[in-house]
Amino acid sequence: MTAPADRVEADRYRPTLRSDVLVSDEFLLGARSVHLVKNPRSGKSYEVGAKEHFLMARMDGTRGLDELGAEYAAEYGKRLGDANWQRLLGMLGVRGLLEGGPAAPPADTAGTAGTAGTAATADEPPKRTLLRGTLPLVADADATADRLHRAFGFLLTAPFMVPLLLLVTAMEVVVVARLGELVDGAATLFTNPVLLAGVAALLWFSTALHELAHGVVARRYGGRVAEIGLRWRLPVVIMYCTVDNYLYLRTRWHRVATAVAGAVMNLLVLLPFCAVWLFAPVDDATGEALAGLLLLGSVQALAMLVPFPPLDGYKIAAQLCGATALAASSREYVRLAVRRDPAAKAYPRRARTAYLGYTAGSLLVLAGIVAAVVALVVHLVAD
Image 1 (cartoon, rainbow, N blue to C red):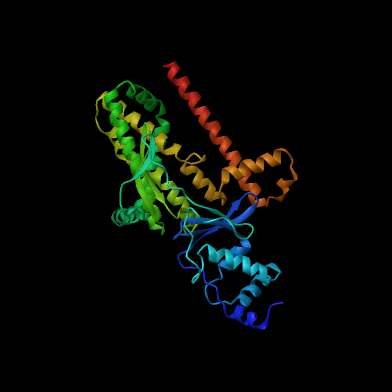
Image 2 (cartoon, rainbow, N blue to C red):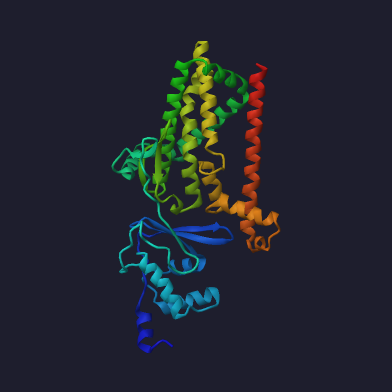
């Protein structure tokens, strides 16, 4: 039994989660529901279950252990014993998540020990070689994103964004309606190295704006941009923009908006070229180059919305399903379900719906891509 002095001390101790600790919404992970917790000082992330999150969300310095225990018992019908408190508080303290606790361990040495149902991850610094690597381009990526947001953030307000989205939608309707002309223009474009190089440069510039758009929209919703730079996997060199706390943005829709921002930017870049192609008198070569740009640019943007990892469409699908590791969890559930494994019955209805929905949707998208490629080949061969 707990000694009286220890009980008084427990009642006086009011654990406080550090104010800079990031805690995510609830996500599905396999058959479980988890919350992600990140220590910005160490850079390490953890998974905690619903019960641990229930207590952590109430560790604001106003409740003692007895009061926290009473709220836990009212919610779950069971009081925590001294051993449970020691494991939980020890785990939080060692990981540097509590005010007044020990310093957070370095990201490369922190272990994964702790209470059951928790895990830790850390991002390893990428190795840079001649063939592959990354190169940050700005010293303070978050400040750069903030400056861009101050300059262009007004475009994200409804009076500007709604008309722009309507124009983009109208452009894509035109692309579909005149797809044959665009395919012919793109085919001709590949026979003209000079025009092809110009279109490729524009598409690369569009990709750079795509990445910056992610950072600007995330910044609008309280995100932190960790890096803006170049990534190369020779012969491919592209820009990247890393949003450090994407999964911790306040709402699901903020995360969806951040993920979709890149594809929307790709399409916005095409708007003036579409206007010239439709309404300006241009020679045949220029018209074919513009047609090819519209087709390739639209494919570039829409390809990013395909729900396969690591594309933006996968991040959107994961948020709509409320899941982390959506693809892996879906594969595992479908495997169990096909084999009629009893473990499949342990998945809650929400998880079953999400994983089956993602699997079915992915197969439909894959079938659509195959059908589009076959139709393109048939069209080119017929010409």
